Amino acid sequence: MSSHQTGELHKIGVKWPAREQAPLDLLDLIPIYHRWISEAALPDLLIDVAEYTHVPHGPGVLIIAFEGNYAYDETGGERGVVYYSKQPLAGDLAQRLAAVARKSLLAGQRFEQDAALGGKVGLAGDRLEVFSNDRLAGPNDAVGWALLEPAVTALATRLFGAGKFRVERASPDPRERLTAIVHVDRPETIDTLLSRLA
Image (cartoon, rainbow, N blue to C red; front, side, top):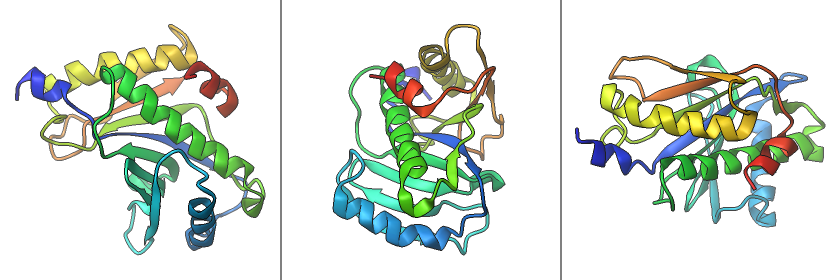
């Protein structure tokens, strides 16, 4: 795997672990998502809703969009707000990650503010995951990690400030997606984080 191939990674995702004030039935998200589509409530060209609640630790309920997908995800046994890109993105890898992180935060903001959810869902804010959704361009190996880690560090520095976070590789198992976990010293609000990505 050449570094050039890994540098062309565009299918990337960001997950913010969720904070639920009360247990959320994922099926309740389906009509909410359809309303978001009709309102064009998120930046992408929103197309449809898909639900995978029958899949243990799966992708949950998704809004399918042209540019990427938004999900309330249960991968790894932990619920969270996810956005992952499916189309080529502008800029270097750090800029692409910032664009994806911004969309994931806008989805988190929508979860926090939607009246139908009644404040049940927010972002924990003390951690985020950045992952490759392309095993060819972003393999879970030493080359992939050597290119992903600096871009994740640049994103985290922009979001939280230098020295206020720790980045670790989730797993070196090549069967798993290449994933970086950012542990944050002090959680920030969604509005603050979005302002830093403006």
